[in-house]
Length: 450
Ligand code: NI
Image (tube, rainbow, N blue to C red):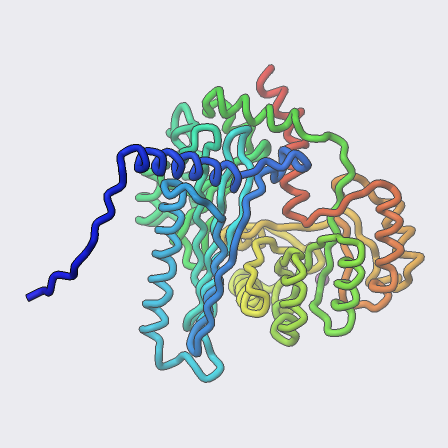
């Protein structure tokens, strides 16, 4: 028999209840609006400034690092939370299944990253990227996107902004011809379930579990899609373009081949002094050798990219080894930095169709450069300055290497020089987001009017 616990019930008068409900509603809205701030400084590229928090768990057998957006509205929060919960449960189940192999220096990892991207005037996407590494070399990856309409405070599915899905499905079918399987057929039937992000340049889709190596990324140029987008979305994309500060001088600094125990910390110091964020394309083998240095790069807030495991020319080693070079490196970089590199810079900039396919199959985008500082050849501060100064232009991606001490010597002068010319520094993905919106304009305009 259950013993009845004496319980004194507090009876609130009706008006108090109403005020509380009313208040929590207003408070909830205020929190949502507060959490989703449009940053006028960077309108068009990443204007949505959402606060994120990271929770970490550390046990003998596993680590978890989970980044989530701070959101108060329970209705908006729930699907995000549910998805994270599912990823966590799946991971913990696999940890349990592999209990014997874990512990004593070998731990499983779950890393969930999140960021926000603006789509149209009123919408933006939260993109999650989860990576679990239990007993496999490759890890298991998923991408999940949630697109939100800020003005109406509701989720937007892809079919909501399309006038028809048929052409879109056909385009994707054509793109994914190489991998027809049962799961893909199922996914293609249901565009409402697709993971997507949109900007003035392209619609990017991510399909999980159709390729065992990771999420498959499909980028469709916006001009091909324009006829099938609803009017409001098409117009809002244009609004987003018109409101960007055209011609602003942004560049991205990139550092390859590290991390290096001597040069990388010096570079980090200089970047910190100038309050500049850069992108580091790391070698997996180096990240494995110097995990603390790799970690310090990520902790300083720089962007982490993949430069393969052993710096081989990918076009010369065959598909299978190519995949290995990319994936092993990604695993090592992720283990060291707790960041999942989503950009790949192939060594020597050597690219062919296979390299493109391998990158896309693994959810990464290829990034080259537009200004080669020749720091690897000249090894001289003055020479580096003059090469960069001659070739620099807004939107440039500058190639440098954090393995030569002469590059670290050249960096303070280089930053001062570029700052004087009015340049601002962004990470590669920030720069790409800016350019996506800005360069799409002419093309977009002629499509609409022509
Ligand atoms: Ni390199």
